[in-house]
Image 1: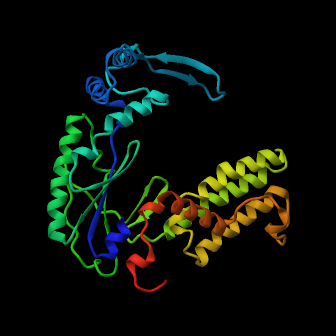
Image 2: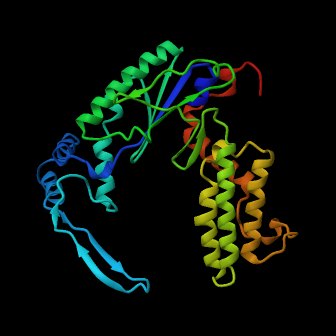
Image 3: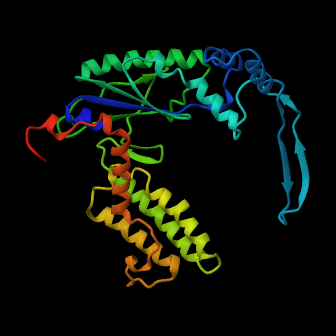
Length: 322
């Protein structure tokens, strides 16, 4: 969406919102009303009311000496929890998602990318003036919704990003004000595990990924002598490949030295799994592990298969083959 807007020279601003203690401030009465509007009524709604009310908690602190022997124990009085949902529980996450589900419905002229309490608002305009007017309108609607739902925006951790290419880099960035505070423009942020920059370049993400993968590769090498081959293989898929696959659809086709660095780290990790030398070809190891180019092909194939109905054919865009 952002790349398409840049290709059309449409001005685009993304607002990355940070909520203060998002799970701890949910209004129980408002949550139950939202559940009722979604069809959770009668006995089921009463059950959720019982689940949320009369919960109590206290804080306990153990004091230890230099020998790690407990010498004192402190405990606060037990207090009733009058707002929020239990974190770490199945219902806690579900209730939070239902609570914020209506946010995009109340904001007009913006696109949302939401995952639990990570919220990104994309605002586009044909020129800077139109974009500024749209930003002001969207911010007003956001402030109204957050205030009505008892959320507090952490303005110091909420930032705006101006996406640009060579044609739009010279334009003046519109001011973004949230709760009477001017938001700083940021050049890079981490959102849903992906490092996003204002130019949509992936160097920062790949460099960070290389650092993390190197640590996992070293861990695999260190554990190889004390764990079974099956355990080492599970560690590779859960720790290494799970990191490698994040955002592969975006940066996997770049090529160049950065991607070769990722591929070299992957080969080093694969060789460490079986104790092979650095000169051994990974193809000879027969571990049935996809390398980086094949992972990209797999991700692209799955994407095309899933969204084939909404993709345009080349013939509908150009009158010649590409």
